[in-house]
Image 1: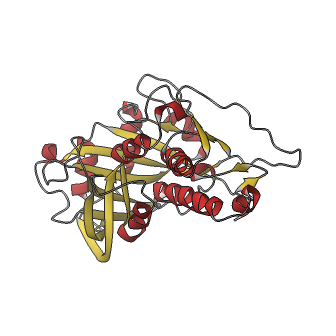
Image 2: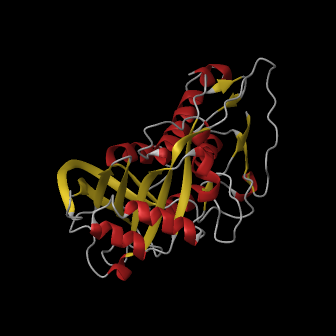
Amino acid sequence: MRVGIIGGSVAGCATAALLHRAGHDVIVFERSESDLVSRGAGIATPTAAWQDVMVHGLIDATLPACRAGYFRFVTRGSGTGQQRWLGDVQMSFTLLNWAHLYQCLRRCVPDDLYRHASAVELVEARPEGTTAAPRYRGMVLWRGLLHESDIGVDALDGCDGWRVVYQGGHGAVYYIPGSGRSTEPGKRLLMWGYYLQVPEGALPSALVDDHERQQSSSVPFGKVHPEVKAGFESRLADLLPSSLFELVQQCGNSSIQAICSVAARSYTRDRVCLAGDAGAVFPPFAGSGVLRALANATSLADALAGAPAVDDGLGR
């Protein structure tokens, strides 16, 4: 079967790798001119779910990962500014660096099957086909990265991951492997991410980068406008425990992503199939988008392998 895959990020590479191994004729169309090394930041996912992905051979034990046996839930203490402990949730998590995962998946796709600078402008289907445009959901995710060696102290007090809750949103702070792929304490990266409500009318001003250029849905790492950063900081100052707010102030490498969702009537229409963010972006926006993307890829490959015909596999 000939397969064209639009988008060469995590879902695209995973789908291409699995279908290529199954003997299909695959081509990936990616609009970016270079590899997507700077997209995303940290990934926290339950270890059991991650092991299921490993069974399909997309990744192996050489992919660097940090581990967390639990996440600590905290909030800002009333009138004190100090953290207030809410409880510890015991669950094994695997903590990854997005760039390392992407590089691993990209290596699974032969170069001659991956076309850079190839933007797909039109997909034709039957006249009765419908489209569903992503809808902005009134909030953005502001994320930042800090080198652990620059922090000076153990910011998470011996825990590998914290979840933070506050009025109108929530966030997470955890360690991921550093740029040198090290998981050793002192050589890791600390990632923080906080959801903030931004009215739709104010969204364009939040998505202006540091060169005054308007971005459509996200601002890359290191490109957040100083005035936007200052505005977000002023809002978090009264929402976060003071120790976590200091990390936000210290960080000079952050990004902004507008949160959108789409509810598709079906994952398939004729020979068009949705996977990854194109297929499922939905609330409560608690993360795991990468895990869902990989699950879509493995589910598609399994369905096609076990079906007597392509249409049957897509229906599954």
